[in-house]
Length: 289
Image 1 (tube, rainbow, N blue to C red):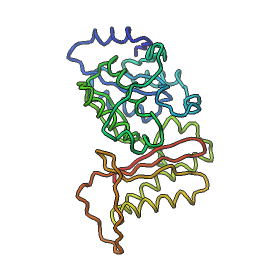
Image 2: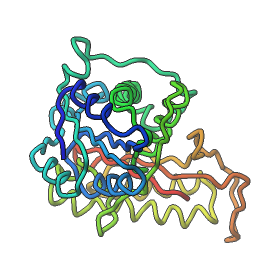
Image 3: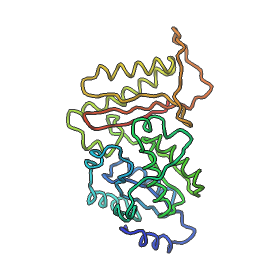
Image 4: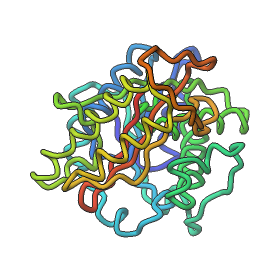
């Protein structure tokens, strides 16, 4: 595996590749885990040359403490990438990416940037889109791979490619979970033993919400989830939303029905999203329902 720290050296490598080779790309912020490795495995199956970037992007953090505390495990990350036989890793400095101006470009994604995460994390998706656009311009991949754990981000990136007219296929990859159901995240390493023990309650709850959604309206299911967390001694719910997968608009169903017949909906492409605080660690998850 080749390690690149400058834009020029990486671009020279990519330039020298056979023009028929398909380039796959996975942007990460490091602290790699099995979820990241599953993206790389999928990229290796679908492309000829896989590039992973490791860059903790300052412009997507609305909370400076979260940025300061983000886990850095670079030596271990490189070892994992070598073991999985990744072709190249790009590890730029902040100055290499942003020069002397660490700021975000403003984007209009048609409103999806203001839903859920966008409502609670000011400027987050401008920061995400800024760095992903920059990395796409540097690497110039044919395909880029993103996990569905950050499903809203995945939709933002698809919109970004469309707006910027970039010839890149965005591939969404299934959520990779721990054996107890907790969605894998670099932030999981920061959970205290007590919070780590409590965290699987998140997935357990949204699985039950999915089951209830077949026979209950969105309003009832949402209130049920809110009550589950209200009664939990450790986990604090920030939001729970059932939304259309495409436009991420919240499904507003208030009609009450007292029987157990299955509800038929014209648009079945819905997903449940939530954000939960485990102490000061913020965890997100979602499930197709």
